[in-house]
Length: 185
Image (tube, rainbow, N blue to C red; front, side):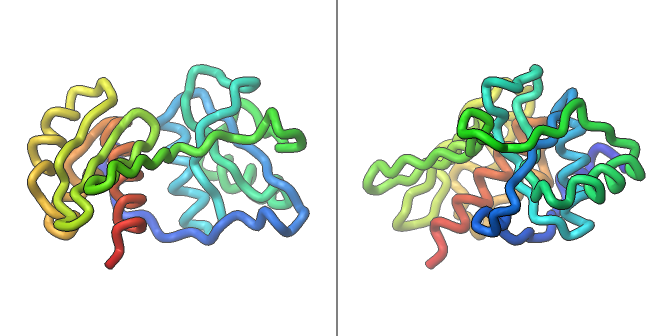
């Protein structure tokens, strides 16, 4: 799989069955590239997963983990092995301290709405749905992403996954998708 395939449109996944009582697990990887590849493999296989921030107790340097239904642990590991992916840890979420951290933070400024995903922020004028600011991150493509997106509406803006090539582009795509969900007419 090529690097640019990481930014292709991902199929929607159902919510994790938190109320099922079966519990969740966390897949911890060595680096963000592995998390993005694992997300793609598991979503294509149809598992309800979420990319989240790791709890402090298990941070390893990578700032993303994958939450999955723990009952699927063996099948998930098998799918990852077939894709030549090996998590550093598979941790059951059995106490509040091990809960992963939501990547999204939303701030309503009245006329404007800001969504932050990881370190990337996207701000939109709520009335016009026009992107007024893209900021955050430290990747070299952030200024380009901002240049291409600011001044565009949510409907006309290029997708960050189509024009970005870094972790910041990936995070901005997540913020963009969350903003679209929140700003549906």
